[in-house]
Image 1: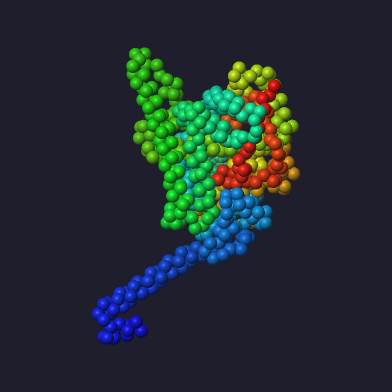
Image 2: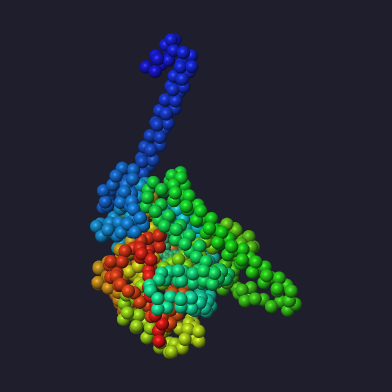
Amino acid sequence: MMKNIVSHNFLPKDSTQTMADLTVGCFIAEALFITGLICILTYHLRRLKLYIKASKFRGPPTIPIIGNAHHFIGNNGEIVQKLIDLSDSYPSPYRIWLGPELLIMVSHPEDVKKIVGSDKTIEKSPLYRFFRPWLGNGLFTAPTAIWRIHRKLIGPTFNLKILESFVSVFAAQSSIMVKKMETELNGGEFVIFKYVSLCAMDIICETAMGVSMGAQSNNSGDYIETVEKTFAIIYQRVFKAWLQYDAIFYRTRLGREQKKCLNVLHDFTNNVIRRKKEALLRKRDNRDATTDHKYDEDDSLPPRRKAYLDLLMELTDNQMKFTDQELREEVDTMIVAGHDTTSNMICSVLLMLASHPDVQEKAYRELEEIYGSSKVEERCVTHEDLSRMGYLERVIKETMRVFPIAATVSRAVTEDFDVGEYTLPKGSIVGIDIIKMHRSEEFWPDPFVFDPDRFLPQEIAKRHSCVYLPFSAGPRNCIGSRFAMMEMKTVLATILRRYIIKKDKITPIADIKLKSDVILKAADPIKLRIKERT
Ligand code: HEM
């Protein structure tokens, strides 16, 4: 038909040309359409096995192409609530299709134990790729081959001897924070996070990095705010199937926003590294200037006893194990993993203490036994004290149960994996439903009652070891769990010794709305009041 029209010679010459162009255009469009169709068919044929295996799992009804992505329209609070609702509606294991990604959610402790311990599920899930523009191949996001080497090198920088030497920094920074909070004394409720996060920031920089950033003295919260913003964007990307494609994401407002945020975040870490390098050079110069070669403490330590950034610098310096870029990625990872987690958790513990005055009183009595009536400035927390804070530790653990920092962690299934009665198919993602286990009536009688004594040794012994996973488990667990516990105890003890924490209107745990900016937290900023302890 088209050819007939073109062949009529009464058409003007450029019309003939136009028709010819149209014919070519139609041909190209058809070819593209057919190629596209073939690609889509091949893609789905290759995944046929995955689809067949996925069909064996229960899960919410799906829509072609987007799967269950429509459930996750909304803000980060609504997304978390949707996940919790799905886990309540479908017993473990159940599946969710996030666009092309098959996510299988598991909350049976025995299944979880197999998953966290297996080499078939050691690779982080493809959903973690959205962190890569920020954290590259740092420990949190690294592919297994890189992760194994780096974790082995970095592991010893978290040994007990090094951690014990950090407690004086935890204590000194906590004292600064408590002093700064004086301005809020006897006033109304205030957002506690702004104080705690700056303190946690100074702590991670001064301990692991060995650089004093003075975030508390300069009130410099830019980096912290940007971290929160970036996490919120990444979480949106994970659950909004259409944002998973770079070509779309970077054309949206969120994509442009993320680019700006990353500039701020990378500038900050570059600054930390630059200051560390300058400090090392100064040390070397000073040493060269002295005749008796007094080696400073860091230099005299064997590699297994060096603090985090000292060791990384040495490994980068000698061009041995780390490139400059890898160094930056690890520093980015450790700063963010090391401060945002603990600061949010400390705020949640303070909320629980304010909401349960009897628990707060008991925690204080324990501190009174250690410190008597001495003031924070007269007698600060030491590492020997920490082992005497058993009740405070149980309060922290119980808070991590009801408000786990990671509601779920997910891994890629790299080979078909038999987990009891079902098989996790290769190519899927397995999600460990931490919040479901932590708040389940099956494992915790009255799960929404705040009871620190659930963590008495005899109570722990009654439970499955994988029913409680605030720091995840297995080889890819949290490298900083001991650091975190020591820091949280020190900061909380310092606050409690000086102030009584109060809340005007107490909300029952079950009614506290949650959101996840990757890190799970109360949807509304935690606001508390402080009163001088007399
Ligand atoms: C209350 C405090 C903390 C909690 C609840 C927590 C929780 C977790 C969890 C659940 C994971 C596993 C994440 C996943 O598989 O997706 C993790 C990994 C990690 N955490 Fe923590 N964390 C805390 C504090 C810290 C601190 C203080 C540091 C460092 C000083 C740290 C460094 C890391 C790193 C580097 C990883 C990745 C480890 C790897 O894959 O080898 N965390 N954390």
